Length: 202
Image 1 (cartoon, rainbow, N blue to C red):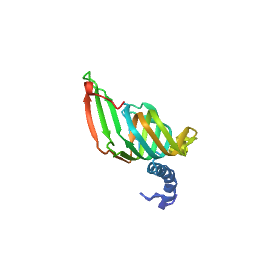
Image 2: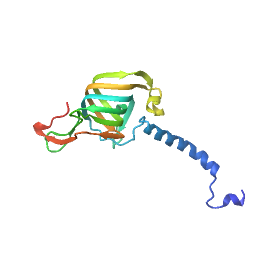
Image 3: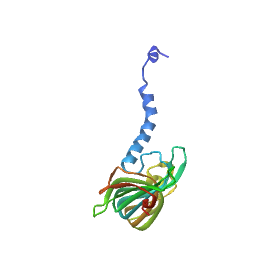
């Protein structure tokens, strides 16, 4: 070994580049996936289910695949990961039945998107437990590879589907997570309802 190899603080750039390349590839893939709405920015969920209803959801760029939400305790919750590039929601309602020590029913409820001014969202990602309504899909492809649709290689070989557009009327949905690039709630009304007034969305 030469004295030049023993110089303190010297970096072997070729070896460094070889080690860095795989990490850069993975990080780059995640950034691109998140930018395209294929991968949700991860966050720990409470594990509490909440209800969402809308008279109508109109979406462009729909993808759905198997996914998992994680709680702080490490519990895995299987969900259907639903991604919509852009969506409008007419008469949107979101409610959660709040656990409490008071022995009464408490509901946190949000209403928005009424009066002819629907709520809008971009990069919408939902962890769905249950979904009901009347759905119309444009150019749907059923049985696609989950890894390709989600952008997550771990889901290769799993079931997925996609469509250029989706319209769901009388939407009734139970979910454990929602994230969006932007979420515009026109005519927002948030209320904490108790007792006999604690009405959920459905």
